[in-house]
Amino acid sequence: MSPRSPSVNEELRRRSRERLLQATVDLVGEHGYEATTLGHIADRAGAARGLVSYYFPGKRQLLQSAVHRLMHRTLDAALEREPHTEDGHERMARAIDAILGLALDEPLLMRTHMAGILQAEGFVQCPEQQRLAELLRDTVVRYGSQDPDRDYPLMRALLMGAVFALLIPGAPMPLETLRAELFQRYDLDWKLGVPPGGVPPDGASMEWTSRSSRAASGR
Image (cartoon, rainbow, N blue to C red):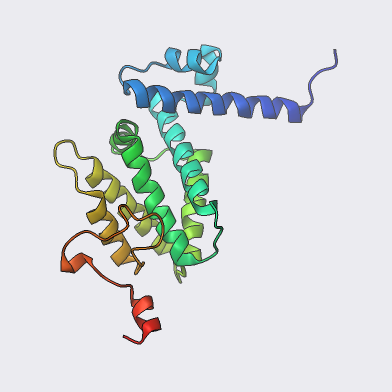
């Protein structure tokens, strides 16, 4: 049997890494961080346990990479769903809704991820985090930012703050309130993206029409 080509070996390594990342998301989402071991992850992925250490220096780094992969996939699916759009405001709305929606869908996973980021090692500069950053930065550019190097980190911080507020145990803020604040910050019409319930939350301060819509109607 002839040896595998470098491209085949690279594809096999990529698939192994993907299986480990997916297994991490599944297990931590089901059982929590402390109850999930690297051995459990390897077994779920159908991989040798030594392979985990080959790709990742530890469980915390593996989790961050896994969640960044999930966030990237979720965001990409939201931005590219039908009907496809190049409108910067619609894409910004979809991005906000995708990240907030993921926090609601995977509260244990996202709460664990946020706690991990606050550890001493902070962000893990992995390929998954870089792909997520590129997609978020592109969203800011398409929105019309004149200074994406400033506006992208600000958007990231605002989304992280909203996710944190959404997931505080015992005192979570309502999704509608957080979405309203972010939509006001970016001058987005409430009807863009995927509105929860279809209407803004009660309260005059949150019932708005975007400046662009007011300008178009002559108000």
